[in-house]
Structure formats: C-alpha cells, structure tokens
Length: 410
Image (cartoon, rainbow, N blue to C red; front, side):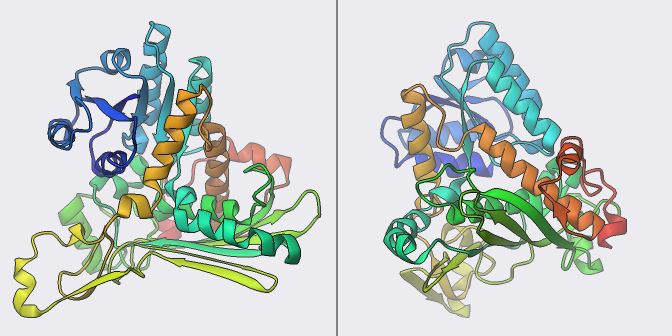
C-alpha cells in the first residue's frame, strides 16, 4: 500500500520509523512543507519507498492509496477539506489516517468525521497506546482471571515528559490547549480500553461523570516563562496552557450495572529520565503494571564522557540528561504501539474496512477530553449522562483554547 504523508515533523518521522517494521506498506509521497525534503531523503535511504515530495494535496492524493494527516492540530480541518475535494475530483483513496487528537474541539472533530464520511473514505484514528504490546499482553494474560473473579474496576494511566518539541504545541490557541489535549487524550483512551471487557465493543462502557483539575506548575514560574518565550516564542504570561492535568472518569457496565473508574495524569513537567508511560489496573485479586522507563538496557555515562553524547534522544524520547545511569529503549516505535497501529491500518484498509480505531471512536475520545476541560474550568464534576451537557460540549471551546487561560491558571 502506498501511503502519503501530510506533515513532516517529529510525529511523521516517528511513524516512518515504525513503518520500517511493517511489511506491505511504503511511504510513496510527502506533501511539500517544512522538513519534507529531509524526511523524503531519509525514507529513500531506509528503502521505505519513493517518498516523492508533492506540491499539493490534490497531486499527492492522485498518487497514493491512503493519506496520513500528521499536520498540526490547527491545520487539520483545512487539510481534510482538501483531501475531501481531491476525492470528489477523482482521487481513488482507500482511506485516511489522523494522528490523535481528531481536532481541537468537538466542532472540528465532528467536521473531520463528516468530511471522511462524505468522501466515502475508511478511517484510522491513530492512538498508539492502545496498540502497546504490554497492554495487549496483560489483557490476554488476565482474561481467564477476569472471567472467574470479575473485570478490572480501576485503572490509572499517565504520560509525562518535560514538554513538546515544536513551538505550536505550546500555544493553546493553535494546539487547542495544553497537556490535557496533547497527552490526556492518550491516557483517557487507554484507560477506557483497559477497563472494557475484551469481548465487548470499544465503546461498551457508558461514561457517567468526569472530575478534572488542571495546573500550571512549572512553566508558569517567571524563570521558566522567560525560557519558554525565548526558546519557543510563546508567552505564558499572556496565553498560558496547563502543564499538569489529572482527573477521574466514571463508567458504568450497561449489562451488570457495575461502576468502574479510570484515572488519568499527564504533565509537561516530568523531570526524570525522559518520556514515561505508566499504566496500572486493579481487579478483585489481581493487578497489572506497565512502566516504559523500566528497560532491559541501561547505560552509565560519567561527567568526563558526557561531552561525547551528540543527542541524548537517541536513547529515549524527551530524554533530559546525557550522563549518569540512563534508561535506553532500543525500539521505541514498537514499544509505544506505533508499529502495530500501522499494521492494523494496513490490514483494515486493504480489506476495505475501517481500522480498529476509526474516527467515530476518536470523536468519543474528544468528547471526554472536552468534558475534562469543562470540569476543570467550572471546578466541579460534569455529568456525562445529562443530555444538555452533552449538547453543550458540541460547541464548547475551553477558555484555555481561546487564549483566556490566565485567570484559570496563573
């Protein structure tokens, strides 16, 4: 299958690394944007495909089988409008991929779903953590226990690191918020997935309520605000976003009435080795735990040798140190689930169906993220069974996303 990339930044490069491990998938084209030429050269060096750089989405769509939207959040609806137009003009695409989140808010996410449906495209919502093999393996291992003892009743999910790479990620008006939208969507999705019985639909559990709290704990301090302004050109004295988010979502099993809970915690102020994904879950008499900083490989680099390290991120994404005892992950793309989400997409689009996680699923993740912002903004729990609240979420734009977060965060 010939895949076309729209976007050539950090996420696109990470996905390209994952595709090295997927048979039957090649990167045939990349839209001409910043970084496209360098990514194209790298893809050809790695024999991942021709990776030809195209000047327009219409031209790209005519020469590939599927398109992956890895463009920044603020550009995604406009990009999808052009993909929609290309299909209407005759491009024979099998499907379209979008990296999480689906949009900055419910209106944008709903528009993405509508455009894909109108164009008759199969969809894949790329939420890599659900495809982590550790998550899948614990599910398989504990399924017989869950049948005997009962399902998991509590899960806790966290993604934390020191902050994003690109300036637009820090700007809440362009990204759509702060760490809650950027990484909370991961933790909310995987929490629900882990609690869902394996033989049930992904949206089987019914959301009941969410209580969330946000903070600006590091990047709102004068020293760090100044660094952010200097390095990224974003002024958190004027338009801050949250660097810490936590919350609890309550779900109900519609068949048994049992209540289960999923806690999420995400931050851009994590000061340990680098990116950490942490998940655990508890059921009656059993439990599991995943921690991506626990690696079979560690290295030690003393002060005298530290200057020889050219790039500490070759060892671990978002690594914050180049010396001392360091965790090293030898295959992060596979560890974090990127490889298997690409494999699932390939199999699904080749068979003429949506991926396991389609855009309708992504829309439901978006709803829970927006409900979390609403809870934090109003300082109370949000009732997810209330029709008026659900209708309100359809047009809700968080104050932080509007650039009005100072009153809430500072």
